[in-house]
Amino acid sequence: MCHGVCPRTMEHQGREHKVYLRLHGELKDRFLMIKDYLGLENDTEVCRSIINDYWMKNQDNFQAKPKLKHFHMNPDGLLVLDPEIDRLVQVYLKPDSIKCGYCNLSNCKHTEFALSLPEVKKLLEKKGWKPSS
Ligand SMILES: [Zn+2]
Image (cartoon, rainbow, N blue to C red):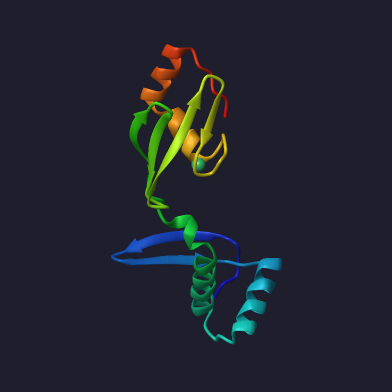
């Protein structure tokens, strides 16, 4: 039975993960409403159903995103390989600005990534450029 708020004790037994849950007040009421709504008899089944529902809505947050890769420097700036869109993205470096040729922005993940690269930092320092994103 669930009576309170705390996933108090969690233990790993082999490949199983146990959670003991106590619910009070509003949380208990909500749980019972959800249980009623789902038409489930078993509290554990209700918990499983809530976890699955949360997963369906939020699974993107848990999957590792493919990382950007530095491809190479070129006269306009550099190329960044973005595996998520499966293409090379040109990032334009200028004395006082940086711009992404894909997003058309100065502050997207591609420009951020470009500015984090040691090669780029070195180049900007050497040229005395200060592109602000
Ligand atoms: Zn971009």
